Image (cartoon, rainbow, N blue to C red):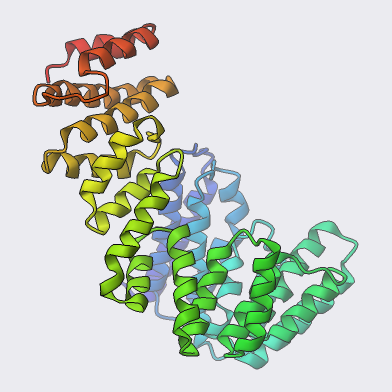
Length: 414
């Protein structure tokens, strides 16, 4: 096993090579750079023993961030993800570090240099490695800095974010509200009102939490399900089953998934499952366009025959953009011999793909058309919809100029 000095030198040299590189990583290559940085972080945490050496190299990663940002197109946030991990590693080291003054100073320095937001992970994890007294000291430092730099747009922006985040980490609703009102001169935005209600909830101050959260709902807060989730938990803690049921239903009808469904069933009882299913199906039928995500949810609650019926009845409203859930539904429908609705789903997918007019997606449309060719041989009654040949002729007319698609389609053997 390598001794720590040898490992330290190797890791430092590896980081130096990446920093000296003049290569620019485009959007598709940016994950390569992120992986290289993540590999260095992993070596620091697994190969080094001495905490001072670990911190020294972690800080070098932080110091290198501007170079890395200017060396890639991080549109997909790969660099942000890897630096969140670096923040986590710093927190693990800092938790048991004996020199608390040094740690406090390092945090102050890192947050003052947080121009790209890559250090935000430190703020999220303050309570994991700092005592309340240390966090309060950090709060006072940045609050003073914020008030002293209110005229400087960049420093003021950073300062506003830091003390409010620390107050939130302290789970002190009054301090958080006071901080926001001082910095923003009395103004509270909806997200900040939500944070105050959430902090009160975590502190078991349910009365205050409900006051803030119900006011948000009256204002039409756009994250209403987040509010309903907290209100549901409060109602459960207060053994208010009636109110809990109301909130659980609001959550389910807004975000249909198995977890929310099971929560509501747990409150209303298995005997009302069929009644709830009918209500869900009725709500989905009224939507336009029909969501593939909603249809996939019906699979989760064993309503495959209803998917078949809805797809046929609302064939013009199918949204082919949600291709993954639609593919899942088509597969299940075909297995149970619901071939007409299966075909309609593949038609929706083809229409969406060809409508984009992007050649790299043609291969998928070709596969679906070949699938339709095979399904058509098994369908005797097309009911009130166009036959496969009629549909294909319609597509030929509408997309006659997509020669690349038709050439590949004709040449591929099913």
